[in-house]
Image (tube, rainbow, N blue to C red; front, side):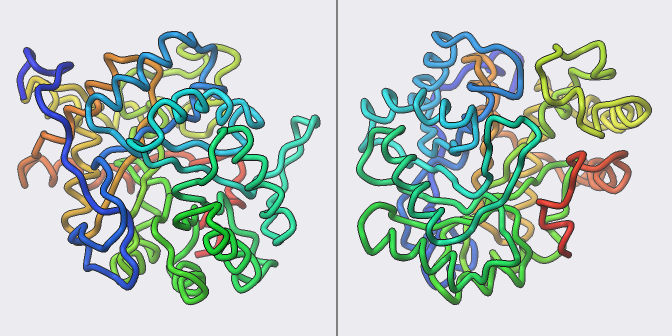
Length: 354
């Protein structure tokens, strides 16, 4: 990959099968629908990362589909439903070309401090109907439990999700931020197509137990924040100066104070590799995710998000970058040296239950 094609594409990305039923050893032929090897995370279009130019965001969605990206990921919590509503026209125009994923479980109210996890069957039934209405579609291709409440048995929550499959409202089921034992327990109730967890050069908690269970069961891993919420692009040194007031990262532990300065210094090998290859730091980080998955024999579809066509094309081009063994060795120690937790409150993550 050279400077001349860093932000351009000449062919669409490769495809893999989304989640097999019964385990496929990570070869990507597990019987699910075929999707592009890189998806699109839609969260930042509606909130969390500052203001959005709607026309630019819609252009970026079109560019993603043109490039072979077919998995589009949203959730009912993003903008309190606004993200799903924003996607509805795009979904309607391309319904047979895309795989649509959304999520339930994190409850938001008018109180900005309120966060509750709801996995009870009644809430699941209400949530899916609301998402179907906002997305203006008859079926959701991949329906995730956004966070797991250990107080609700999987027999109840996944059982209720399985009923949605039987009713034709949902095609496949997914979980987010669960441990390996939890993934196995849920899978025993109904096959799980995808596990969505944070995985990047900065965050490798999923490798403790969930990743092994995903390989064993043939579950596709869908890494969110594969660019460390943008930190791995090399754009930040001080969140207080680099980010707008409405950007939630100003309050994330890894972006603040001494943590931010420590973490910025950890990117030296990323920048070194990027400069030598004529690529960007973001492309190095995304290539690492794809190749790390190969080490484990895992089907992986990361979902970086962006609101700009140029960044989308940059991210897609990373699927054709292959890092050398020497480069991978340089990158290996980074995650173990990162300063700060992934979130201010880690209680809703799998790491809290490991």
